Image (cartoon, rainbow, N blue to C red):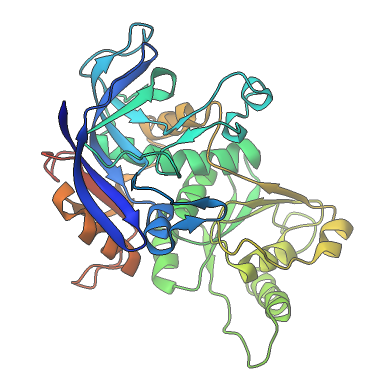
Length: 375
């Protein structure tokens, strides 16, 4: 049967709408009619560059992985869901038997099937098959739009709560005030951080960040002519510490720093800012190779950690934080598009603003035959 409109990436800057067959499901899967899908920076990166790191698009691939929808078919082994349930979709199917899966770190599974990561299709279609165990029923007080944004929120939960282990009354500085950075700030606030510093080069993003979750902001200085990136980062860190009264030790030190930008100078600056014995969390994907002050990691005994996607417990915690009113996802959705306007949605996300000049934080595309007003 063929009645599954899909938004397909065929090559760099080449996307088309295709009608594909309705997927079959196994007895451990559910079939979801996709209602809402957020656009992630990785989707745009595949469109513009055709690859991210070692993941290269070599055959046509449906885009999208931040999605929610309604269950239309349930496999015989799935007991916690029924047809008609509104669900958030964790878009990664793992093997369940490798060492990392059994250790509860299934994001590291070597055989993961992750939506819209080559060669696997994503969720920007009418229907998407997904294992029941990574499909979560939405509480009644969460909208389908909220359900789509659980995916990037789970990324933030994984970074700040799981990898970072942030505790009540700790302090944190976060580089990058895009959607993931903002959600990291929201998670830190929900978990009781006493100080949340947002760092970005765009003042309007920082203004939003302070209204949303940050307690303080910092705009890095402009580079000087002939200045190396490392010298600039050292100077930027000194300016930030002086302006905000940050020390290397004691109650005014920063316990955790997190980079959600992927920019080399942000990474370097964060390492200079974090307290001696503190934690560094890398979330953003930028250049695959960056220079870092490695001796500083040694002499400060820093805990340098990578954070990749999400793992056991991250989706349930993300849903709980929203359901309990500790995080509000609604202010992040600034632009909404119908499925037929997916090309425009990607162009707007790429530009960072719509034709009327409105700044974009997160764009959401409705599923085929779904109104943009259906939340």
